[in-house]
Image (cartoon, rainbow, N blue to C red; front, side):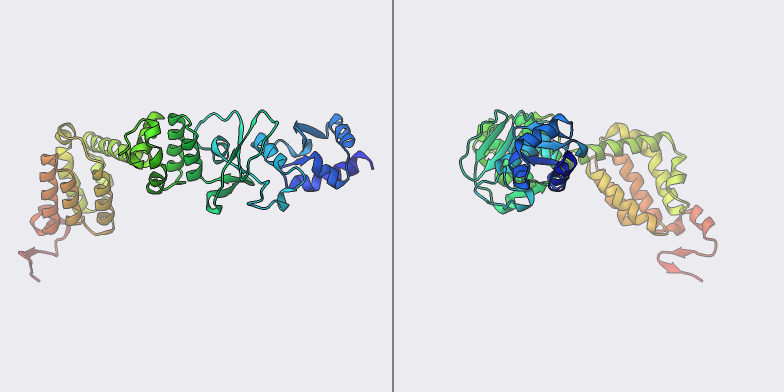
Length: 350
């Protein structure tokens, strides 16, 4: 059997194992260790780890060290024949799971794998941890069984990993909607004391503490900060560019009048008050309702005014705008735009 035939025997199974094959698997296919060495010398194989070879034509896969270590747990068993929960199986966990999930920047000098029974390894760069995992705590990432993100975080806390590094993992997971903060808080609360908090501290307290140590922020905090900064920028833009009123009103007289009244007081409002994060939500709701209508919704304008209670001048403007919208016949410009319509005190005259 020439080299081409030998390589052909390996390529099929290796293609389903990220281009990797173990010495034991190759033996099961009919190749000897000597033949593997000759293929390696010819540049057709690469001995990437103890008893694990890579078909060079396949290219190096991501997380090569993790995949090679996981294959060695059951060196004779091909990936497609491995059973979850087998006594010799393993699940990528701790810092290695963070690498697979691409969370945080926690150092991972060793490959960490959780196994269901106590085992030892001669590999100095592989760390086996013994623990029982429930099926719902295991997921598949890049073809490998790995602990879920919440289980990974609790494992790191149990292992007393650096708090700042764990905080970075939590912040990334939260930003990508990979965790529920409420559920995670319940799971991590028992670890609060070992990270310097009082026994009475809640899981949320611990999460905030760890994220703060990482110099990060949770997604809701980022939204609140962006809302405040964005709304402040919008106020300043409108205050210094009154012509923007015409653009944002989209040709609706009622909207234009409301924004004109608002813009006249923006200068003093920006200086006198710092908008609350709730302002953005109120503004978005107000504009959404107003744009689809023929004129601004008075209730929406009042909601925005209530959100800006720290700015009396702006609130006066908003209240005036709401009144002009409720009773457009009192506004001379409305009468000019609607020469055929007139009303007084709720009575319509023909």
